[in-house]
Length: 291
Image (cartoon, rainbow, N blue to C red; front, side, top):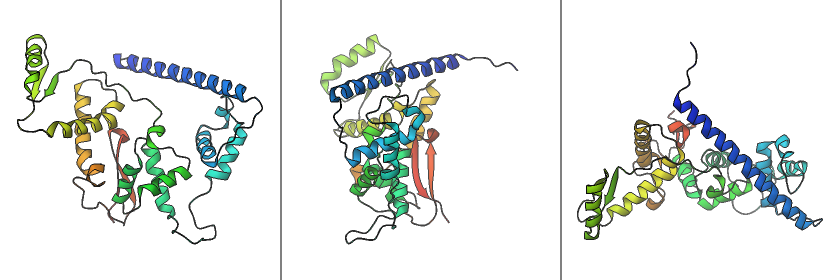
């Protein structure tokens, strides 16, 4: 049977082409900036600390030597990869002689921190700390920060380099407003001139709007803003999946980094760590599989 192109195939191909072209332009601009800085430095030696070297080493190792040779770098690709061998290959284990002071972090905890951070670019230290608590590891957020720093992993805002997709929703179908009399004129205009439905908040609910705005912010930043929707059903499905994820799988920093409705196995220390995924892995929940 011959393959028939659908309209969404053409749209997807166009979007991929736009993204590739945009990435090429960004790389060319960054190369031009680096070349300008190197010319200003001339033969002066560029001094980097271990944290900066470790960060460059991790990112360089991920793209490989062949790709590095095609980019403008502040030091040679071989030098950067040598940093990786010397700095990043050092693990949190007991191979070195134990020194007085605080106990060393267990290797399995370190592996979990690194895994959660790499699989969830938008998660900060507190979100990772909450996920660790759910699988029986109780550590401070500062420990999470130190482990990520030692592995050359940036904080959450810097880890997410790819810009979020627009939701492509332009025309508002509903507008939620409170019952303040200052909105009466606007409500009358919308009723008479648009198809937008005005939804009034319940009376005597001064804090309702603030809570809902925070919930919608999480919904948009963690879910809707990272997806492209082809029709209302796909949007409804995404909202429904996030609604299931939010109370029982997402730790709330405003509630002491706890789950609103934890499952019975939350905090278990026995069993293999597994990951429950929603929306193709965009939403993740780490838990222990019951023995």
